[in-house]
Image 1 (cartoon, rainbow, N blue to C red):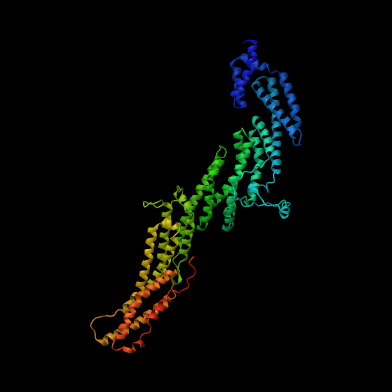
Image 2: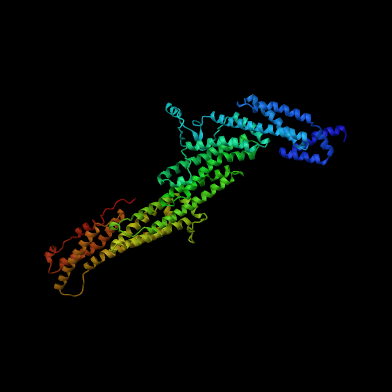
Length: 614
């Protein structure tokens, strides 16, 4: 090498190592390769750094840095720039001296430099934490925009803020398109400069910890102001259901604000403070949000592993839909290597909630099966199980799209019914099965009635109620028109069965035998038939006046049908009676009911206590 070429080679070698090396460690490694490649190059590189130079540099840096390390006071803005510049020099010195650690004298200086660097990092960590806390205090988070907004401009609210135990409660959020700038831009810039030095010195975790400790408190306080309590899974499961319903409402508000406002704002803040250091930003964001996310997910999990009583369906649906609707936010916010477990946990709990919903419907099936056929409903009226199940299914089907999604998902540990070959969805098959169970249960209950006519009235009442509840809503769309037509026909058949079992004997009495018998025998037969008719009719009216037909149209339809069948037969019978020779003008003495009286008595049927049809 010529002397001039050697002088140029040294900076070139350093430049190549720094350019190719993406990190300081890689740069040092490349320099070592140069050293090993040519001994002369090693000599030229090392001879540029003498022991005296190293000692002098270290002494100067120690003098500049130690005054900041030993002080407990916050570092001013002007002093901060000088302190950071000294740290830059120290980091560069450690980087340059590390490849020369084989030299004992330089190695000794290197140890002292690394110790000084460690003390510097501790001081920077303290300063970093102070800046985060002070920056947050400069923003009045209880009165700002976003999730922590409070209308507290009046004197009354100013007074309550003086109570240190007072926790303000957030106002309802209607616009989630909000980003909270929780720290001033100048503070963010200062934090970025500190983070840059700590990352360069290899203190990523320490910097991330200092940042996350402060910001984690902000998130926890924000969720607390939304009314969310820190509850363990056991505490949630021990709650009374009415209390848990209130907590679910608060949880829904809190998780929406967290996923749509708080977490995106924290992500943005991390990215700005750790700009250029994506791994550090990801780690810090995870440490900030992990605790709050687990708190929110644990609540949903507690709901999922709780009781599967049918009355819980609607709140469980609310929790399921909330998690489902927030999955895009989970996917977007928790997409990095550190947060993937949180995202996966959210997916797991979402699927578990779906299993719970399917399990609740199985519990509804069991409830119908277990409902005992003991005491008969007075007057053949509407059974409570019919009202409960139909109102339950009608309300559940308001969330038909969600339920369709739930029942089309893989069932996990729940064995639910898949769609059939008629093109019905899994949910439609499930609903049809529940209706079949209900119908079988009602048929068993109808056997309690000794009077077959009353049995038919009972089935007619409950069948009509079922059909009416299915029509013109989402449940009807699921079961389909064929199902409705089939069950409407069943109600008509119960109607026919009632008339046959109640009035056939009465109508039989009114039939006049046209066989050739003597007039005296005919008159005697008519008198006997009239007595039987009066007895039968009186007995039926007395009995059935206390029976119940809930549906007004069905009640009138049934009365008209009875009247339309009985009145003509009775009118014809009375005419024959009045034309008989032995009766003549004295026939009215034997006739207790006129046709009008008959129809009036029929109109009084089914007037038992009907109650409500809701």
